[in-house]
Length: 212
Ligand SMILES: N[C@@H](CCC(=O)N[C@@H](CS)C(=O)NCC(=O)O)C(=O)O
Image (tube, rainbow, N blue to C red; front, side, top):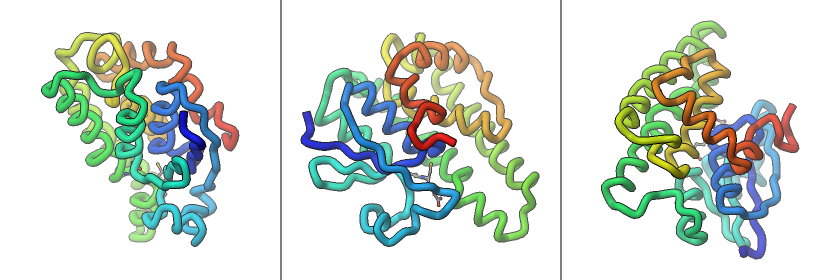
């Protein structure tokens, strides 16, 4: 067990949500520090000292600071290998990582707060911003649904949750926020399987201490 784990995040942040799921799946206790993104708390110098990107999450582990949710999840998986977030077979691992990266690299960055604020600053009105986010998410999740179409369930890649589910569930939360499609093939059943696990249930934004 770690001496201390402190998760810097925000209840609505899907990247923080990923780390909450991973920590919960590993059965790790952690303290949460909330940084209100709408109020710009991520730009406070004290937080920038932890994460120069001014993004949540950041995880303090025994005094060290980790950033980037995927790197944090893989760190947790390497340090606390059971239950694993990646399958043992190299080909299967690559497929799970590809799914996770499709969300983390190609979907989420195009619809996160910073990106949408930049569109607003360039004259996009509220409806246009929401349409941009919706289209981005629909485009990405359509491809993700295809990536897991031939996989067995109930989770994205088989009988146990993996990094793919850790990424998918928060992204479906974002899809709902922006009115994007969530009922892609297999996704409702995957979501139901995840919702039945306490690790996923306890990571939901609405049950976090800073939920509004
Ligand atoms: N690739 C980063 C993304 C982090 C990220 O975009 N976090 C969002 C919340 S989900 C954020 O802090 N946004 C604040 C901003 O854009 O100013 C990760 O996976 O940790």
